Length: 198
View 1 (cartoon, helix red, strand yellow):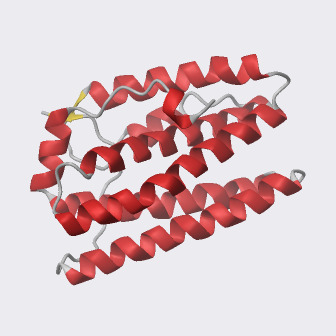
View 2 (cartoon, helix red, strand yellow; view 1 turned 90 degrees about the horizontal axis):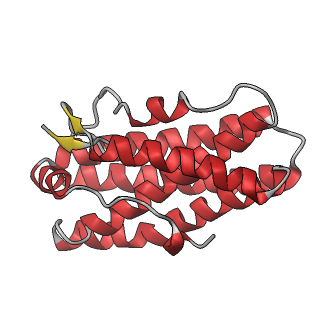
View 3 (cartoon, rainbow, N blue to C red; view 1 turned 30 degrees about the vertical axis):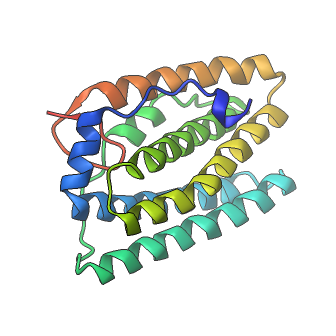
């Protein structure tokens, strides 16, 4: 499946308006998301050492996510935004509740879930380009290709490990449905992966 064929619901316009009006929260939580994405890749590397090609891909992915983290920190420093602790959005935690506990289904679900999260990040980066200042729009535009590549990498490995592609497609539908529900539901707190602001 190509990224462009993915059936993602669009980010609500109310979220975009909140993002444009609250850059400190947007950038701080984006930095947190990049850090967590690197951590996810590293955790998979530690747990699933029996897949050499996956290890190579995850190592590269983790480095890219940490580079993005560094870039966001640089933008924050240039704008006088202090990096501080922030509670997480409910998004990733709710997605993780759907991960099966027995192998190899657990690994397949983790890969599919990670693909959907990367796809959502990519969609949001694209939408943010339309509402932020020129410098930030340029930055978010520069991240689009790597997020698409991460999505495809996770999904391709899920297809390689699964018994058949239909199994992956079924799980992809489950995680996409959860993503749609979380992204369109109202949220009390604004975060990079939150739903529509109350």
